[in-house]
Length: 191
Image (cartoon, rainbow, N blue to C red; front, side):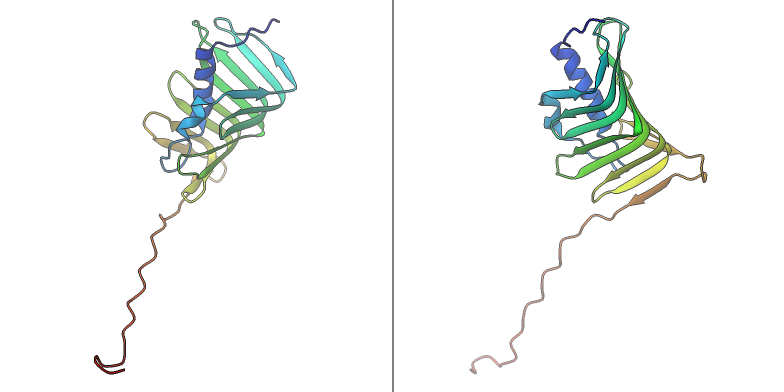
């Protein structure tokens, strides 16, 4: 197959698709906005595909996708192009597929699942197969399937194993209370 370099627009859409996965957290937190403006680097042992209407390009073998603070890894990534050769979906699989990104406050978000599936047209990210999302200082969620709407920040989860989705919400850090003023035991006017 022939490889044609993706246009800037397609690269930006792919970047958005992958970066949107970074929005996954039990509590809304925006991914680092500047990451979308960064150059995307994609590495894999093998590549098969090209950018043409209604096609799928496949990356296999130690796939690593980076853009700014965003890093996604897995054994395989499939990039789906629509009729206008725009990226409509990105699916990363692995043991596990892994995602990490800093938010604008410098908090690290980590996501792991057997499959990370992002629908770029609907703005829906799905982590399935032993899925977990952790955001430092905010909390975590675990289940068989975690779904996140990148437009509304709504998250849903389901689990088959023990029948439960597990979530932990950490309290927001409170500033330390000011120290009480020291009182002097000596009466005024006396040394």
